Length: 295
Image 1: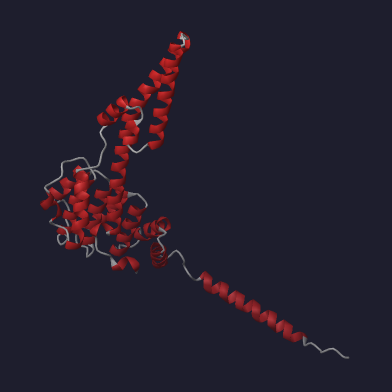
Image 2 (image 1 turned 60 degrees about the vertical axis):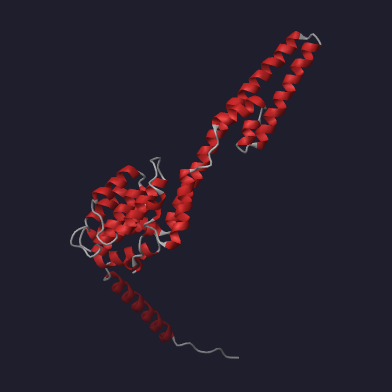
């Protein structure tokens, strides 16, 4: 059977066409300036929406060297804050405080960052002196002001004055935080010491360390019994040896019970403050959502 004849010119024209298309594509791509201001801005916005704040910062930074764009600067500051570069974020937000349509949001973010930095006395001073206070968001700042008292050791205001700025749906949880802050379920080191002095291990059981408490009770009891038994059998050396060990464990049990209350109380404070911070994060620090951040 005869094979099909191939046209040598068809293969030549196919290769020629393929080469021309590749050359044209390369020429078109070389004409695209990926590092132009507009392309940097588009790429920065894409990275921002993907929450890739680290790379978005680089794109916005290069763009803002050339152009002045309030939305880009706001996003730049927001990304800096998310990456923990709070001082730089504050400086950029300040650049929007005057004559910018985004000044209200920038001032709110300024207060939010100052709150997150944890110097609550300074934060309350800002609120009192109304430094860069947002004109239309005074209620939000008052709410953050109240929460600052839950996260430091200053005296709490009156409960009625504390909750009056919150919405009806928020008051129950806020009042719960207030009462737990005012009356924390701390354990008394003195009570723990007295309990362990009377019954070895009782102080640790008082703080919820049941395993350590039972161990302390058994060891102290066994060593005391061995000391008594050896003295009774006229084995004075072993009697004094076990007496010394019993006294050592007894004293350690009392000291350990006091230390246990301190650890317990630190845990209570840590978990309380963590709950408050989780609540604030869920509430977005009472700030309104910025629609332009998703564009």
